[in-house]
Length: 537
Image (cartoon, rainbow, N blue to C red; front, top):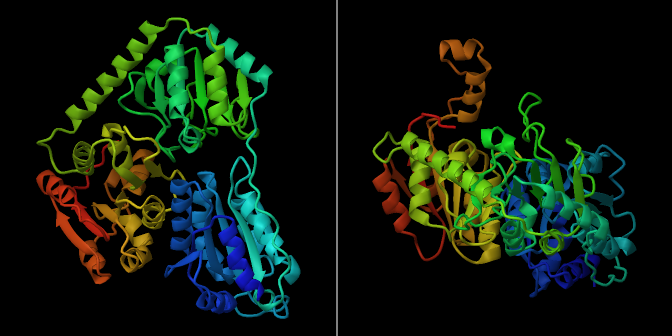
C-alpha cells in the first residue's frame, strides 16, 4: 500500500469526512489512491484554491471538525493565502496539505517550486512543516492535524513531496486532540472580586462563547451580575454569541457609544483583543477598566493593560465566575443600557423607513425582518453587514458566521462549506465585489447541489473605498469623484445561471420578501438585490 493510500486512511481515522481540493499533477498519487478507494474521506473538487480554503474554513467552523484543504504547490498555496488569513483571524481549525514537486527537483528552479514556500505561509499558521522523509509522512500529517486542535486553535500547513506519496509508508500514530486549559483558581477569585466591586459592568460576548457552546454559561453570569451583554462589534465579529431575545442583550458593541464611557468594568468574554482599524480610532472605551477572559494567554495586554485576566476554556471560566460572584443588584444600570439600546434601534428604524428608497440598508432591514432568528447565516457584505446586524434577530445558538479579515470572496466558499457541515440551507449575504472575487464557488455549489442561497447586495461599487475617500476629506471627497470604485456592468444573475444556478433579480422590498419566501428544497440559488448607492453607517 502506498503512502498516499495510507494518508487517506489517516485522515479518516482523525474524523476528516471531506477534503477540499483543486488538484494539480503533484497530487497524482493521491488521485490514484482515491480511484482505488471507496471509503472516506470524500474529496470535494473546487476550481480555485481560494475556494478550497474558505470551504475548509466554513466547514470547520460549522462542524467543529478539522477542515482540510489540499492545495497544489506554491501557486495553489499563494491562491489560498488570503482566506488562510481569514481562518487565522477566526481561530479556525484548518489544515493545509500542499503537494509539491519531487525531492529531486525541489532544490532547483523547477516549474511551480519555491525554496521559501513555508515562509510564505508561516505568518498565517501556527505550525508549518515540510515532510522530509517518506517514512515520516503519516506522523507529519497527524502532527499537522493535531496542531489545528491545540488551543488557541490556528491553521497549520504541511508540504508533501510527490515522490514521498508513492513510497512505502511508516506507521500512523494514534489520534490525539489538543487539551483545553482550565482557569487558575486565583485568577477566577481576582476576577470575581472585580465583578463584585463593579457597579456598572458591561459584558462583550466573543466568538469563543459560540465556539465552546457556552451561551447559557454567559447568560447565567450576566443574570447574576445584572449586567448588559453586547455582541462583538462589526469589525471583530466571527460568530454570533448571544441571543437577541435575552433580557440582558444590549445590541452590537460600539466603543464610542456615550453610555459605555460610564461603565466601571468592561468584560471581554471569550474574545481576542479587538482589531485595531486605525490608531486614531479607539477599539475600546477610553479609561474603562478591562477584565479579559481569553483562551490565549497572549491576548490580555496585547493592546490594553487589563485590570484582571483569566486564561482558560471559555465555558469553564464563565461557569467559575458565575459561581464565584455575589450577584449584587444592578437593575438600574441594566435598564439604562437596555433603554439606550432600544432608543438607538428606534433611531435606525427612523433613518431607514419601510417606504424609503431601496438602499442597501433598507434591503438589510427587510432581510432581517423576513428571515427571523433561526436562519443559518454567512455574512460577507462589507458595507451591508453593519445595517443587517443592527436589525437582525438571533435566537439560535452558533448560527451566524462572518469574517473580520477583509479577505473579499471568503463568504462564497465558506457558505458552501457551512452547508456541507450543517446539511441545511444557508443564506449567504454577500456584496457584488465579494461575488467577483469568489465566482469559482458557483461551480462547486452547483456540482454538489449544495443548499446555499447567495443573496447578493449589488450597488455596482466598492462602497467601502468610497466611504474611506469621503472620510479622508481629500480631492476625491471635494469633487465627489471616486476613482477605481465602479465595478458595475456584471449581470450577476446571468453569471449564476451560466453555472446552472437558479437566479432571480429584485429591485424593491416587496420583491425581496417574495424571493426569500420562495426557497427551494435543495440546490443552490441566487437572489441579486439591486439597490441604490446610498451608504448608511
